Length: 489
Image (tube, rainbow, N blue to C red; front, top):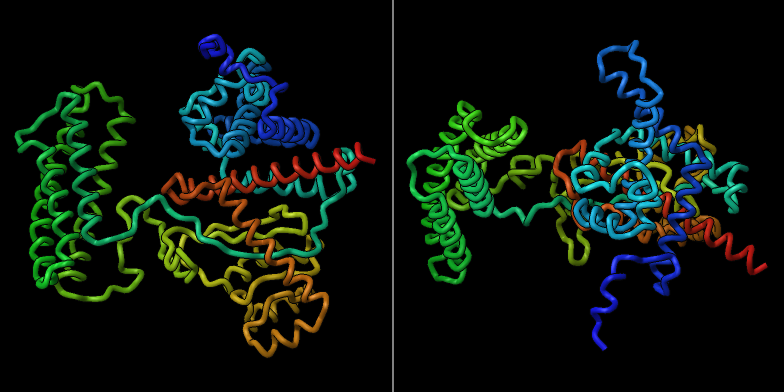
């Protein structure tokens, strides 16, 4: 029997499906829907969005009509739910748009499709949703959820209140979306970016007499292969210097052509079919490469030809991500990671109560000090803070003692560690600390293998959405477990 008879129902998935993972996902969506509608998070989100509309209008006395208020409220609620759903599905904007359009359950959750006046959002709309609010406000929503589920109000969701008297802290590195920073590979990236921008401008009708732009790509790729193969030769150092000199010549030539095409587009943009924003994007791309190309050439020259060793703060790791840092962690398979450090603080049930993304490499001892200053745990009923030995130090010990919080940090000294492990309570806290590694992995599953953005403000916003989505996912699982236990009883 041919399968064609069943193709008509391929994308008509229903909740009655036998697919367990999909049923569990729909169950979590039901619980998250209940959290949104019951806790007042949706109202708080929509209210903030309406206030921002009035503030950005430039007219503080602006009065929105009831119809406008309804339209903006629906937009804000759909944005909140879409951001959670996209990260729950662990999909890109394009993939999430396809999945939402293919599933009535997803459309029902975000109030789109046939179940509301709003249409199914596309990838561009989902991207706009992700940029709708800053990370500071997402942090406020997370705090509202923590207060809701840490009080007696948690009983209306069918689960026990969260216990936040003990916090476990740990740090990790969020990998930037860059390749391993090799000096001559940066030069190849610069030529590729400039040639692609030149080809884009030429496709829209603006041309200047230059050699075929694709020839620069062929030349730089050939030199990259020659550079890689030169390591195996007896005169490797001499050949690498010779190849780099030829690469530098191509880079300067491509840079000069890129500058001429940049000026051409800036002065004659009206002759193309490009919008102002599209042209600005191309110009910014060329300006970014032209600005950093001299430093990349000098870095390669100093390291390969002069044989110098550069300090960490002197190195250019990427032409596109200015905030990526080299984090030496010494772990198996990740001796050095390139990205930004993230500090998280979780309570006993795994709820992330606070987090901090760092633009520059920061010592763990300083991270704990920043956490104590920003979160103020002594004012939130926290009694104990547990960390690994990287956070331990006399300054932090004195800070915890000053605010009357029990020190659960793993000591650096082996002798002190042996002494403290005699305490059963400390031993239990350190044993529980192993679960924080799993919590870090859970957070990174929502964030992704690599950060999908390069601007630091966008990184902070993406990390905030990931933490909020993780917490909603966790609360939904706690509610589902509580319901199963109630049914079993």
